[in-house]
Image (cartoon, rainbow, N blue to C red; front, side, top):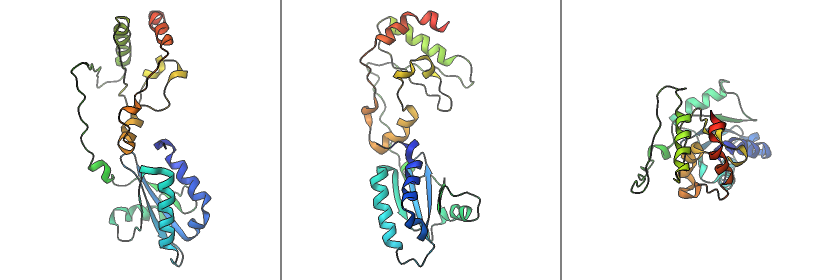
Length: 221
């Protein structure tokens, strides 16, 4: 599975290793976190290989990037990307590789047509939110200490840090057991890959957490 954070480098590697394409065409890649990316192919040669190149790029990138690809298109007459391409060609945006540009434009259709997520059944689970519009008020500390207290009472607790810009919950746990990808990755990729519950992480060896709970008072205060 290709993650969003590796998408740009994957595309760059593809175009750099297929230099014949960038000799004949220019490629403008519109990319955002809401719905994948689209490629716009503009001819700079006689255009006789244009359609074959378009089909080739479409097939190759579909194999490389899977559901991230919205498609490979001819930009002629597309008013939504016209200004973006002009910015690239006028030097406002620098190319990432020969005749390859990355830009962010309008939100993709996948975002506008996003289906509402079914609400979590609360029949046997309780959700407690620690919220403050101001940073530095101790939300993470309060969350963690509450979770530790509940765990000491035998409760099963799941902690989710919804601070998208600056999460800090991970600082309190052993680095060796932290997942490589987190909440933002799930929000971005769950719809594309239909991940559902497969993203839930189960840690069978909880001895480290038991030690953490037993020493939490000296570890935190």
